[in-house]
Length: 258
Image 1: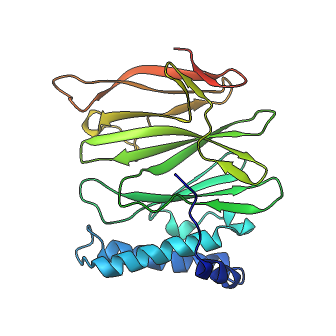
Image 2: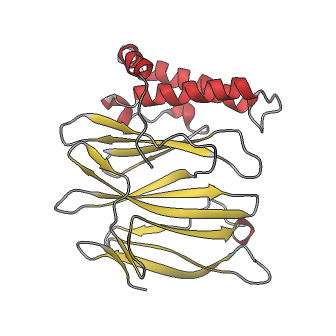
């Protein structure tokens, strides 16, 4: 994905955003989200134009506001049940993701990345806007290296009521530049920046947590693990098992150890 080219009007609005309080920015964002829920596919008052207008306003407002240092650590209590905000342990890297409200059993999510560069400036990276797909980010793990932290972000994809998937993606920051495709995971096929697996949601539906947690991080071992998924007649979309695949950081790459 290429970084979004932010329109000039967004840059102009950023000047006004700098004078807003964090609470007022949150109220503005919350209003757009409420309208998206109201006019979206799941709200009962579907209106394509109003949905797309509010979605565009939400995205533009979040992008222009996210360059503020105080928003990098702001908890956004009023948005807690409306979007997903995943923050790294060092509080220097964050991903916001939200439902575009235009899907069906398959949900479409968008996201932006907010991070602190070595200059002390807070930067914003956004993928190009797409017509659908994408997941929502719930966890960010971190391992420190001499060249800086490696951030491992975990996202969930909802393909249908039963077809789900999760992805572990690696990010790094050099200076003020984000590498959104940090190839630090060594697989049998070579270096990659991500590992994904699909599964049948009904194989884990009895778990109490939402979203379902399937990727685990061990800080002491600098390793992550995720379940082995088996496709069989009972679960053709993939049954989550109690066995795991583990990758451990060897000082340069995450390599499979079990």
